[in-house]
Image (cartoon, rainbow, N blue to C red; front, side, top):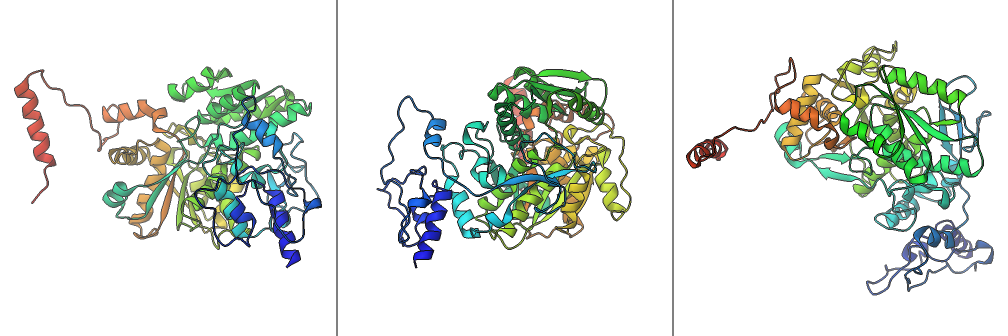
Length: 530
């Protein structure tokens, strides 16, 4: 009995923000509505703990002092932890002979391969799945620093050793998972289709999830006097927006390499508005990526592209959020658009950690959806994983995934092989039609989500995904970033594209009779058929 109480008291010391009902298993009922339970109770010192009782937070949460902010408040409630993470060569174990501290500036292994952030899973396994579920759920929707973020609410699984003071966050994440009822029924004959709208985030794309982690670590490195003056990235739009926003928040210079005339104005204006030093370069994304890697090897500029595995630690939290939003029930399928291919691995990593630590008993099958104009992973998949060749990416409306030589190809293949995954592709006409159909049901999605919906449509028609399968489509960016593409589609101004779901405005004279005539015709066509 004493050892059990001590175990639970140590749980509390690691996570004082866990509500009292979860800290003390002896309690048989949750707090009543009249009892205010602090999610930031006083720090518990295990060295002074009683062996017979768990610490109880104060029942009266007082508002912090007027001259104290939420960082100050978090500082008062710091607690010890025994978790750690480090860089190791991709697909190695935590005990790999080659490893690096996260405080080192390193992007590749000694052999030139990818690195991965690996957590001390044995330390995390000291707490069961029920504990982690309750802890993560207890933080959702709070303003407690830094747990108001969907990323940092899983801090122990992301960057466990970073000080809360070093975190740079806009309380990103916690994005909407909504039931695509009409689209599912009308176009897919499905009743359980969901869209994880990661574009409902600080800068309008899922890239915020990874950038908060990377810039927080850079903030820490600068405080440690490491040689980092600024942070740079190659981008097709969304990465530069996230990088510039988080750097601006932290007061860190940001440098952005953009392919000239290949991104939307809505995407270009974000880094400019955030004060980034923007270089418009006469090449494609792959050319920009080659240049930024060469530049960061020579200058004290920290590389922010997904070659840097810190980004994936933030992005994996979207997978954990999906499980939370389904009350820890695992969907059958998750479909993710793929360009540089870090995101498909990040989602796999999030799901796999939840399985390994006992939060769920399985992981979903995953689909990576590529634009046919930039489809190296699809071609590799169709070859039976026998012959990978980079391609010269052609222009695509799904501009963020217009990448022919993806950095994370090995990560993506590993993830797909280990979840019995599938790769599909979408032509330009298919992805634009899918986007228009989704918009007609109220979504207003990005072209990349159109790629994912096309993959879903093909897998439904082939019978791979069943009508009753719970399926999640990951929407990676907000449709407002791609208004020109939508205008061109609905104006039928795209060469060699039928634009079958276009809905252009109807021109009519400013006369009562003329307006009545067109409205009668419209309503007659919309009237329910007998």
